[in-house]
Picture 1 (tube, rainbow, N blue to C red):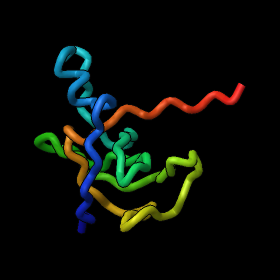
Picture 2: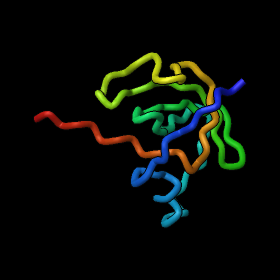
Picture 3: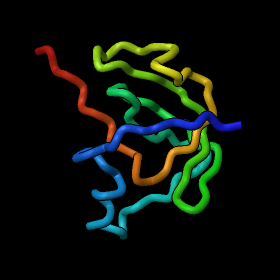
Picture 4: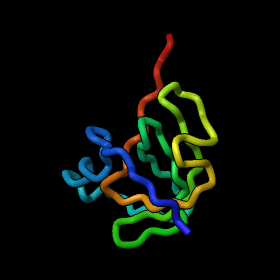
Amino acid sequence: MHKHVEWDTPGGASVDAHYAKDEQHRVTPQPGMMLTARYHGSTVRVKVEAYKDGVTIGEVAALVGDDGDRHDTHGDLSVGDMVRLPDDKRAFQAAADDDD
């Protein structure tokens, strides 16, 4: 069973909006790929198990807090949870802060 998740809106990091302008480079998620979304301010990495009709089904592989650290849980979401991730909630990975 999949955990119901209220994903954050990706805003300017929206994969869906980006590829709306450039459809020829849009990639359909395939099993094993890693996708990114936002949940309560954290970055969530989802490992694709299946994709159908604009929705990815996959396992939460990582939760990265706004502090940049990895966590086992964030809110009601935990690493290992099975989730549904609609295309319009996918986000590009945030750039890492450069401390140099």
